[in-house]
Amino acid sequence: MIDDPLTLAPNLISKMVGRAQGFYASASQQDLGLLMVMNFAFSEGKYNGSTLTVLGRNSVFTPVREMPVIGGSELFRFARGYVQAKTHTVDLTTGDACIEYNVYVMHY
Ligand SMILES: *[C@@H]1O[C@H](CO)[C@@H](O)[C@H](O)[C@H]1NC(C)=O
Image (cartoon, rainbow, N blue to C red):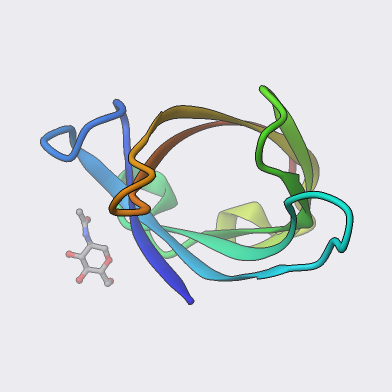
């Protein structure tokens, strides 16, 4: 399960605007392909209380991984779109990673 801070910049002293909560599972027998199931739960500004839901395949060694935004709540009702995820830093000893998500979403 994951429950990670969503920050504006790629470090933990940067302003937190929400949390990335969900889970992922190893879903590929050939390579490292994850099934990601994740909510971005926002806690700042006009999006406080709103969520975006991401569900897709994360081929973690690909430089840019695209995954669908399949919906959202509150201000993100009827959301559709995609995210592009890039690994900013990864520590293979601790397993800690810092990932940049660029989110493209249409909503009402
Ligand atoms: C976000 O909403 C919660 C619940 O309404 C509230 O307790 C909190 O103070 C809000 N945070 C900000 C930064 O507005």
